[in-house]
Length: 452
Image 1 (cartoon, rainbow, N blue to C red):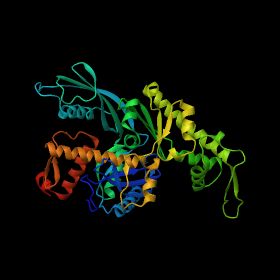
Image 2: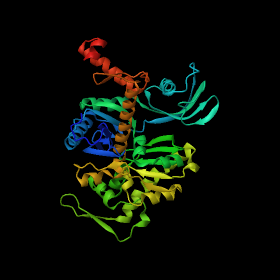
Image 3: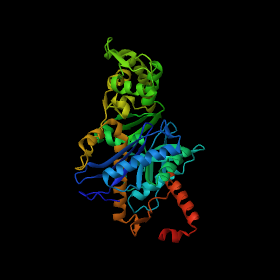
Image 4: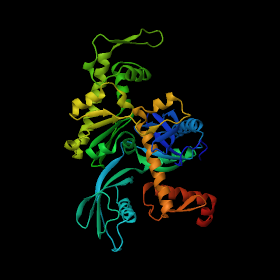
């Protein structure tokens, strides 16, 4: 897969962000200094996604193929396997507690025991049409001793854990998988987008102190709340930057592309920060007079919608029960974070400290990448894409570690056995199903399929 000049031993990994406004493919690896080196980035318009959910397979596939082609050409890497983000209003989260009574009393608690607990969580009965995407361990309890963050290496009989479980609609996941397969790609991992964004814009100290990440995208606003380094709450609000654009289009009676330009160039989340006498002249339709719009009136339209989104965010923060524990306050990221005076508006509505999250902390410049592209990558709109890349690199490094320790068996360069995983997760089920279909089409046995 790697045709690029190698400066470190890290694997090259690809992140794929299928957003409502853009499809972004980002190729990178970890340098010897621990930073993320981006080798290439491809971007295409997203015409087949509405509010984070695929609504047109063909258009989405075209967008993915276009973005992959650009990123592949820029990085000189043949892209085959991607780490994909998932979002949308269908995403739900719940808390659950798992218990494991250990039989091997002489052995210390190991990763195998935690994997067994996680696999049990994947077997939970969900409402029809829903499937578990992520199972995230929180605190552990060993023999009634609570508050243990890392139980590996400890002795104990009864192992308990609180889990944060994230679920989504099976159809929404299948449509994403279908788009990726139709684009000639394979999926390494399916990652919740707010979790990815948190990797790129939040520090370990912030997660420990208590912080709410708010990712304002085109179709949705994603929330992830952390406290004591553990994820406590996730939510997806079905409003985003496109809702603001539609309000401007209707409120100012302009075309949609003009409304988008008005928002990005002159938009503000606080009307009082703008002067009364500032006027924007918008060209009229063919043969019609230009339209004059007050910057302050434009800001009133934007402020109304942004206050609604912030109120939804604040409701989720209060519902999580961590409102008084967020020392780090709120971090806003995503394309919507570029709106002027937004952090002040958030502080005004919620009373919490607020800053804009930029994904530049983890990035390192690749020598062959043009400076303009690298600088563009530091924008909050690429927080999810960079986060997917970071999560993908972490996953690849975990797999390499398992191979070294012998818990994953590799034959002829292929992973053929991973004893620590039982394959009860959503992605494993879909992968197993896809493999069965391929075997049926090829009319071969399991043994012959593995040999091939």
